Length: 395
Image 1 (cartoon, rainbow, N blue to C red):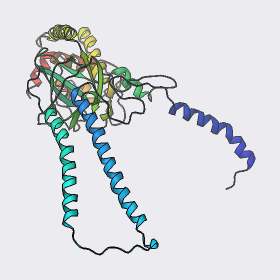
Image 2 (image 1 turned 180 degrees about the vertical axis):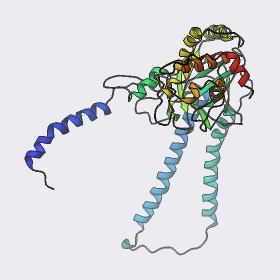
Image 3 (image 1 turned 90 degrees about the horizontal axis):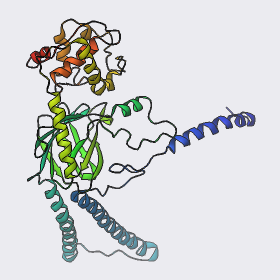
Image 4 (image 1 turned 30 degrees about the vertical axis):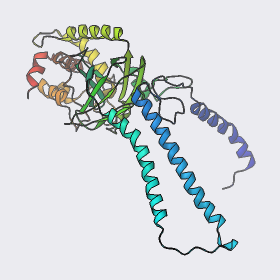
């Protein structure tokens, strides 16, 4: 079908509007994120640890060596082909073996490989030396969040769950930043960041509750798989105060893109203060599971627990989305047998699509169960007590 001139001209304004919208989207304003990715970043970051600096040096060193070898070999090859081509009257030499040539092309590559392997081996060995750590933290990968437990050193006993910041998840659900909105840490900000002291050796022990995840922070030069049933470890010593970002680097399911890592490196004095504050918060959360709550009080707490942990998937209105089942009107929520919903919260279901929340306290689980039973159209009047959750944990 041929397009007439008039029709083509009439489409120009629409095409111009579409092109303008596309260009405005393509040119969406953003900036380099200190401690995270940069605009149009193609290379490895230099980082803030000695290991990351060595990795950056090795990356460039190996690239230069390989490029020089490539250029040299192909230059000689193309020169020989062109200089000694048949059209110029050259006749090929007729020989079979040359011991000298074979010795040269064996020894020279061997020496090159050794010279490349020595610095690389030194860095790899250093990367695996997790001894004499000042602080040891267990990072547990879960669909789709990280659990942090401070095992040894200053801060021992502190535990937290780190999930994508709720405002950023809401922004993602709305289609991402719009127009000229600038969010440099988009999908990288979390609610509870990992906090570590500067110039201290931090050992990270990785494992997982469900599927394989990977703990990766490029600025530290670390990437370690977190495998269910196994324990792996890595380490870093950050030499600069600041906030650094990473992500789960192993495809772990549909929410893989919403599993960021945020690490705050602070001074020794600020770290000590943070530890003290966190221990106060932990002490305040040590609720007595035998305490009997009123419905009004437990609903207030349940609303906070739901917003922090459940709303990302089930939405604030409880309607769910796509494969995520709604809680509003759900049979298991309305059921007067509280043990059914408690077991779902403790163990998860649907092969991990609904993850386990057993890391939350008995009171938090009772609160969120009570909240879902009495919110939206679920006006059941049912109250789940922490003692009920405690009784179900061992089943």
